[in-house]
Length: 317
Length: 264
Image (cartoon, rainbow over all chains, first blue to last red; front, side, top):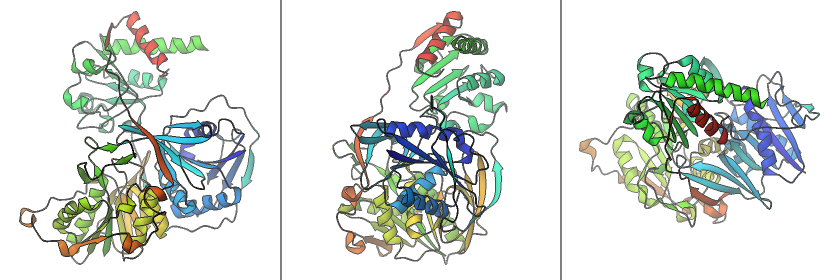
């Protein structure tokens, strides 16, 4: 039997469920016991009933941004339970705590894993490097445990049976305390980063219908981005601008609605797997780098496509 | 104040050579540059040096000896000391080993604050700063885009970090490891014309495994706890541009494309 510890962050609880799928990919032919650790979380609703054990630790003095405290606590759990693998989501905090813990445990770690292979028990963790130009398969050697941070949204969590989750309250675990305190928190107006989006629905001068762009984005589990023309009109924040004066994006799907595709915009498109462009001018520069070009009014097409996808969902149900 | 900047030289990602036999980067051949996030750390340190000329700034880097001339150029911008940690035994070290090596040197010197970058443009694991902090029993914050200059002293720093959902301002006790991101406004200035040929050899400190005394099994590829098994270059098909009209058929083509590719 393999024992896997999942580090669950309150803010990314739903995304963390993908770590259950990662456990299954790591050990496809073993029985797996999954343990989740939840620090200072009022409810563990998203993972409750899906993993075998939840370690719940409630102590106001322990801050999740304190790498000293968290790495000590996790390291103590490791010495008690000898997990075969410890998994983190590759979030801002996950990517800080994971390497810190790996160093404490003297084990190898792989960051930002996007795929896993297990060939006759040999586990390879696959990750992009060199701005995504190279994919590397990496093995962890030594005593273990296997540690990694996993790119969010890649491993999807499906068809799991509900299990009886045992709740274990953790108390009196020895740990250091860091000397860091929060002075101020400001929430971002745009809660996502288009550089990290897997699917982008992008609007240009020919399509400023934000309501429907958002509608399509919701259906595709995507984010909305925009060209400079839309930003300069003051319709959206510069934070979601694609292009040389905006951000460089690498989603797997980029849908360009009414975007001409001047060089400054195309400069912001890097290593995109699929591009669909909708434009009244089929010879616009964006069209020459597209897989599918829809010739016509972008706003009208956007509305039609939303209807079609909604109908598809109804038929599937 | 004694500030140490730990920096990395990285291959130009648009133009680098990778050895597919050994799965290592041919750092000797590729055009190397200062990792952009790390350059922000240098820029901030220099700004502090301008405010307080008594400050001492040391730049530390683990790299092949071919990087010496680039380190000399950094010294010419106005740093007090540069330490190059270089040994053929260290080639192929993963992040775990690299952090051990750097920490062993850092443990020997005095500092009030260690600055670094957050992400590197080559490997982009962000492991080393966290791991150095763990080895040296220091606090660490990354993705810092602002450090309050007026309150920065040898006992604490006020820094602002950007994460997925918010900007958070922390007060952190020093010494600590502070990792900057290129979203910050700190930049490394160019060498002034009159200093282009300045002799900086007395400020350059080159150390090897003779000084750090690791066994050959502990470092390099041998000591690494992660091994690159295989690599492949990500390739993209040439675009098979398909033109459709904005009618029901066009909608169907796009719908099926999205469905086939798993986006719906």
